[in-house]
Length: 175
Image 1 (cartoon, rainbow, N blue to C red):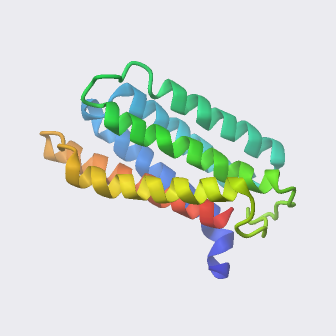
Image 2 (spheres, one colour):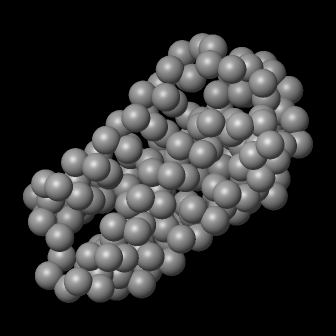
């Protein structure tokens, strides 16, 4: 994966743009909480690609992701969109953990975004488990949850879900 590492932050930003655009394009099939999380995540992922080598930026963006996840689950309890909002909200803490992982180990961050610590420490384990959980949830949700009645919205939400999963995997591999 070494040849891809310099491009990994921009691949991540592309996944964020695809997920954000798909969520917004899904319209009313995607609740406001989900659209908010997708747009915040899009902005954060673009900022990671541009400024992800600075420790303070990574800390602040991780906090923004956590706040977005908390706001994204407000008022969804008991609604039909609860599972999809929680799925989207689960992505943000995983991204935050992946951002903070290199900072917690004390490794210097290279301009490529890769700190070279490998998989060491508790945050690495949490990040890997989170990535596996998000990808499995994406697979299971496609099979279990009923899709929106509108085919167009269903396609957009599927694209958003898989772009989120791919983005999380790319970030945790690259960081």
